[in-house]
Length: 420
Image (tube, rainbow, N blue to C red; front, side, top):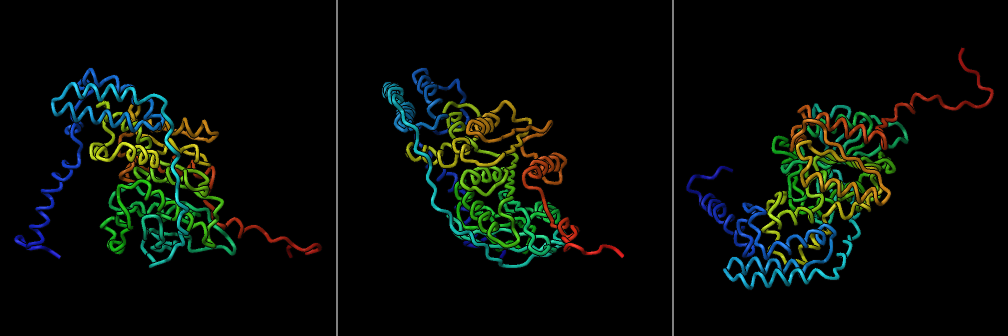
C-alpha cells in the first residue's frame, strides 16, 4: 500500500527514523562516545597499561569482568574531567587482573526436533529435474523457513548426500543462489538452505517467497547457528537423505553461522566457507578498546551491557574458542586484501585451536580477491570460490545421483547363462 505524502503513518515513520539515531546514542556508555574516530595515540598515559594488560585475558577468554568495569569507570570519570578518579580506576583495573579464571564453557539447550514440514512446491527454469519445496521447522528462536531440494529421479532405496547451504545476504536467498543450489542438486545432492532468523527467506525479486520470514533477531549469531543445526537434523531424517554424508557450506555472515553450527552438531562431514566474519569477538573487542582496527561497528552499543554479560555473549558466539568441538575437516577462504589484518588473525585463531585438538583445517586467500568477493555469485571471483569450496566438499562427501547403481548388473544365480 502506498502512503499519501501527508499520511499519519508516513509522519510517524519519519519521526521514528529521526529518533532512532538518538536512541542509539543514548545506549552508548559515557566515555565511549565517538570511539570509532579515535586512534591509539588518544589513549591516556595512565590508561595505557590497563589497555595493554587486557589483551591476553580477552584473547584467552578469561573472566576479566572486574577489570573491564574498572576501565569503563575510568573512561566515564575522564570524560567528566575527573582525571584523578580515572587514573585510580585504571590502576584498580590492573590489580583486578590477578588470578583470573577461564570463562565457563557455553552450554547449549537440546536442539528442537527440527522436523521439516513442506509448505509449498516450487518450480522454475533453475529448478528443472529438481523437486523443490519451501519447508518450515522449529528452532530456538521459533518458526524457521528454508528451501529443500532433491533430484526428481530417485533410484530405488537410494539416499543422497546432504548439502546444507547458509546464504550470505541480509535480505534472503538470492535468485543466483537458488540457481546454483539447483545445479548442485542435479549433480546428486539433497539440499537444505535455511533462511536466517529475523530475515525474509528470499530477496524481494523472488516474489513467490516474500511472505516467509523466520522468527528471531537478524543480529543473533547463536540463533542463526541453532537454525542451521535444526535444519540439518530435519533434512538428515528424511528417507531420501544419507545422514552420514553432509556438506556444510556458508558465505559471509552465513559462513560464521555454519562454523558455529559445526561446533554444536556431529552431522557435518566437512565444512567449507568463504568470507566468515566475527570469528573471534574477543579479538575484535580488544581492537576496539585499544582504538585499533574496527571490525565491530556497533561495539559501543554492545558495551552498554554489564561486563559479565558482554563476556558471556562473546564466549557463546566465538567460533575460535569453540573450534575444538568441530569434528570434521574445515576449509576457510579469506579475501586476499584481508591478509595481515585482524580478520586473518581471527581465521588463524580458528585454525590453531582446531588443529591443536587434532582436527584438520585449511585457510586460503585466493589471489586478487577483495572483501565482498562472494557477494555476486556471477562474478569470476565468486565462481572461483564456489569451485574451491565444491572441490573440497567432494573429497569428503561427493555428490551421488545414484545412477551408477542403476548401471551395475544384478548378481546372477549360479549356472545362469548370459547373452544369446
